[in-house]
Amino acid sequence: MEIRLGERTGETVKIYFQRANTPEIRRTLPQKAKTLEEALADFRETRKPGASSYGRTIWADGAYVGDVWCYGISPLERPNGMLSYCIFEEGCRGQGAASRAVALFLPELVQRFGLKSVGAFTFADNLPSIGVLEKNGFCLMEAFEEDGILSRYYEKTL
Image (cartoon, rainbow, N blue to C red):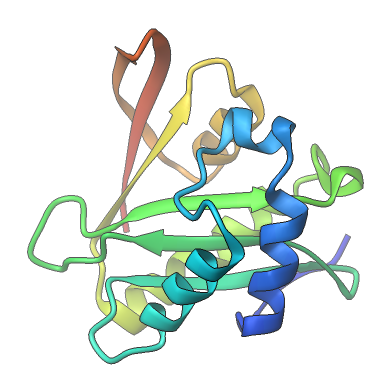
């Protein structure tokens, strides 16, 4: 499977919101935007100079299958940002698409923003996400419970 990253647009934000807004994905990836209008407003904020969020689309063999993004970008804090990703195309899950997309995305964060570290949260039972992080060299920093849900915090020096 050939994985490449692409530009986010208003159209891809609409597709992502629709495709990732499923009970299965919401169970493993809390969504900030509750409406399409909120998702588009958040996207417009990422286009402004000095934005603290940056994302890319994930393409597998020419088809749009998900997104990868960094939020809370702040070169003066540790970590310098927080990583998140989602493969909404069910047939691409478990095929290495997210791992490869993260591997392509991390150097962009260094080049574009000068980031030196990035963190990521995942639920403790989300074994595919844990695999993506560990394959990309993230280290488990903390395991904790929040609102009755076991979670993990990972970090990577870039």
